[in-house]
Length: 217
Image (cartoon, rainbow, N blue to C red; front, side, top):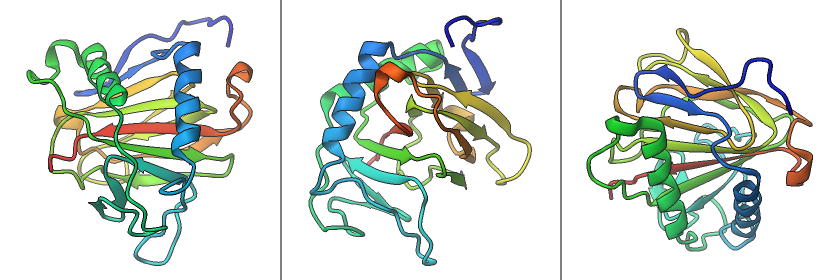
């Protein structure tokens, strides 16, 4: 949107959970998209995630640093082609640390956060993500979420249940969302993607979400 009636500002959605609109400018979005396209190539490329119950996630995923599968981590794509997981780039680690500083400010961890996992999810128009917690890590470092492409409804809930209370946040291309501290284990999900809302100049149909985490391993 070229002109906002009410410009979007930084919002604390819950204690420890902060939304920063337009954190990535257009150039950085294009650079990150180009990198995601390379990371999505096989081996250890974009895959469909299958759950232990036999279902499949509608968002497809590629991992860097550590390979996530329901519900653990490995150094190889144990639920895919078996290839070694692609390395975690230093530039994503620095991006994650800057995101935490910008979002949480004085409440950011005292020591530099050693990000070593990236989960990159691709959503087409029909993809969704059910309410879940990021609880497979051995670290309570903040989770960093970056959005590219189509706008989505991001549902941020509570630490106790997958149901209310929750807050729906509109995440657009370039937006940052960070959650740590008391919100680190809050349930969250994506109930809706708004197709055709990506910036035309980005050249992306669908939505990419880059989530940075610390394994603690």
